[in-house]
Amino acid sequence: MRATNPARTCLEIARLHGFPDGLVATDSALRRHDVTTYDLREELAKMQRTRGQATMRKVIEHAYGGSESPYESNLRALIIERFSQVKIEPQKPLLGKYRADLCLDGWLVLEVDGDAKYDGTYGEAPAHVIKRQIKRQRALENRGYVVLRFGPSDLKAPDEVLRIIASHLGKRMGNVA
Image (cartoon, rainbow, N blue to C red; front, side, top):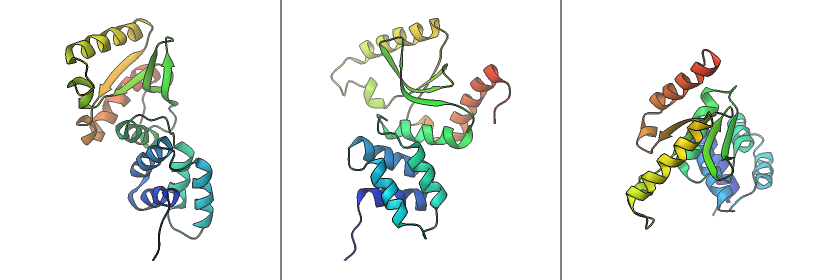
């Protein structure tokens, strides 16, 4: 009977299902401490004759255990694939008391919020959560940041999400892919 390990599983997902799925799986495994980047590199070395080396290396290069949701990891993967010249900072501290899910080029803040954040699942009244988010967004915008919010349903149409991001990036830096 053959068995696998978490590092091998992450790399196989990347190899067989592509970079976005591989990054989501690997970020999750890193966050849960099921795997380390050392484990991933060691496993990759054992897989030298396996197809998909470039994708697996790319996943290891971009894997980040601080992603708070698979949606953040998925959006980050899509951005990495589409906008290679953009600097992506996951979980970037801003203004001393806020943290951006993703910050692009130091000014474009992307928030990826699941529905549970606003439906009372975490014991907080939705109106209170929304009010706090508006206050946070205004503070960021007053300091020159542009804030875009996406939810899981938005990521079902990734081309539209990437078009919106490209539009904002293009306004600041000229035409972007």
